[in-house]
Image (cartoon, rainbow, N blue to C red):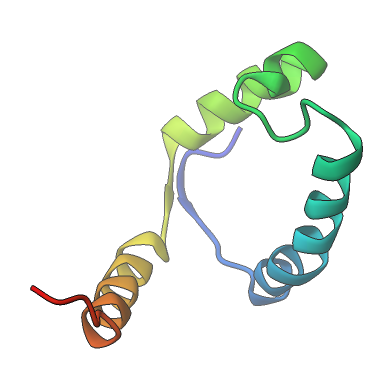
Length: 82
């Protein structure tokens, strides 16, 4: 198992944001418990355990950058009356 920084992949990220979104919305309409919390453990416990450990021992390299960008976008387009 990998330990440390994850290497970002632009193509995988783009695919996850486009194709995956369409498939997820269709599956949510057809399968009643699709995408609910805890379903990964029920469907595939071995994979769920592996993913839990993997996400704890590796670090996302883009996460700090993404947080900064999201905050900047939120501040820019925040039209709520204060």
